Image (cartoon, rainbow, N blue to C red; front, side, top):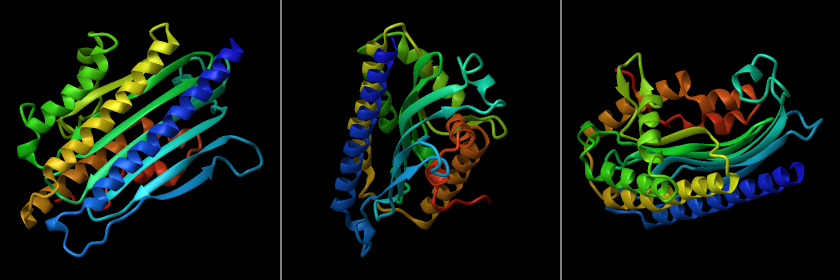
Length: 292
């Protein structure tokens, strides 16, 4: 069993690294295409930085942080990490299997994109594998339009994004999409505002069907679905001109996004509680936002 789990850890972390490279290439390709709306802004490229967890006195894992600040993507981050060690006494009660043994291993990828153009939706995606005395996958993807007229269930961007997520789910179990769509709607919700963060997608956690191979295949398909659909949505809107009023609406909506990530996001909490890289954890925050 120990030999199997070590091989599985290597497979998972290798996939997250591969997906990171593919997402970086896809976003840089769009950044290089430019558009009439972006004037003299130069094309940006991802800056990649490796980091190690802890103070260096012990091997606790680390990751690869990739940040882009460009003309199409005002801020985009695509990060991978593989970290391990022991959970703190206060936190281990919140993680399945950690009360019996505080040792953990976690590997995953996290993406957040804040486009400059208010017509282009922001987006988030992450997938991960976590091992304690138990083993499971989690993740998902969700779409976050910045303007009210796009924040509709019947809007074509919403429909296309959900079709992609449904297809990834249906290849494995038709029950996944309705279950994980509902979970996404409930998870990405700001109770103090009585509103959803975006138009949803799917969210799953502690996913263990009893077949590691099947669950890993599902997690890969979620990543591939996002890689396919999101660049298409960006290209659909990237050349649309915008007004100062559009930009003001975008910055207002970004404020709501920041509130959610700082108050409720479970990934932010896990990263901070396990000594992750602060820069990559908080890179999900938008570059500019307003609170009227």
